[in-house]
Image (cartoon, rainbow, N blue to C red):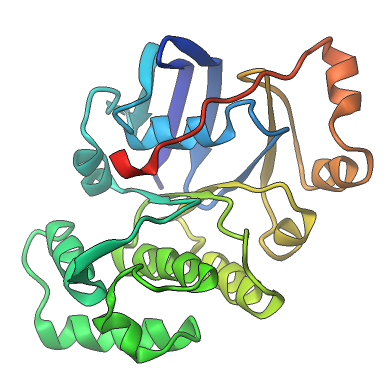
Length: 261
């Protein structure tokens, strides 16, 4: 069992404060849904946990199994067991999908994984995600459809086997069949060795991946936490009732430049 703790996290970008004191504890074997109106800090939270250099942590800390990772680089956090499934995966010409994955898998293991074992697991995982085997030999995300890019993020997650996956709108752009495949993949991984934080606006994803906790971010803070029933209430009534209840106003979130990842 592992624990990811976010304590009083304040995050700014280009001098503008986006997160204004986030407290959140996630254990493995838990799925935390993050919901809230656009521009209130959902993606910022995931990027800050992952260590995006454009996001300045001005107060607070991030701990993984009691170890402070707040000042660690992205690759150090990744090796510690954190994975980010990006909302808009970037294209990397010149590096094949399989070369990228093999390098990443080897970095995450004390000893390099044999080529035979790697290829066997990669082919099986590609099949389970209903992707074409040729995907392994194409340049990373280059020419991929939107659905292929999102399922390729899940492919990376399954190959790297992180303690915690941060999935940022992994359902956007997916048709029903692809969404079922992605949801099934996340559900299969849930265990005492795996937990996830999932950002999405849509009830349909959380009907397939049943969250153990639902957290609503508004104006840079978690203002409400509940169970799956909160997803249904938001789907039916929107967020205005939350704004009215807490006297909040929506702030616009700064756009993310994924080229810096």
